[in-house]
Image (cartoon, rainbow, N blue to C red; front, side, top):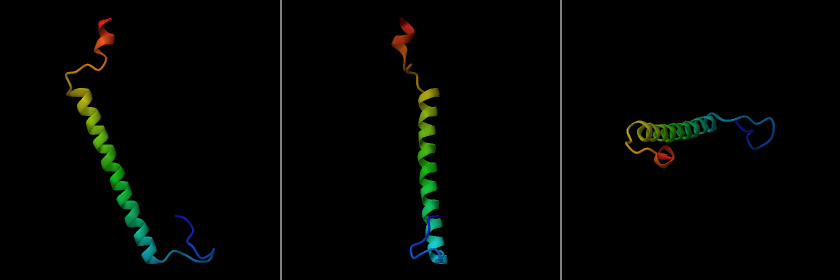
Length: 60
């Protein structure tokens, strides 16, 4: 965590630590969901699609 405002001797309060933990938890969850969706879309496009992406390359 970054150093709190107010100088070197000031430490994080319990409320600030809890707010920071909640914020980071939400960010990590959002990142996980985005990555999961991207991975699921990749798997669907790769294994369930009948369309060959480089069909013209394979012909020639």
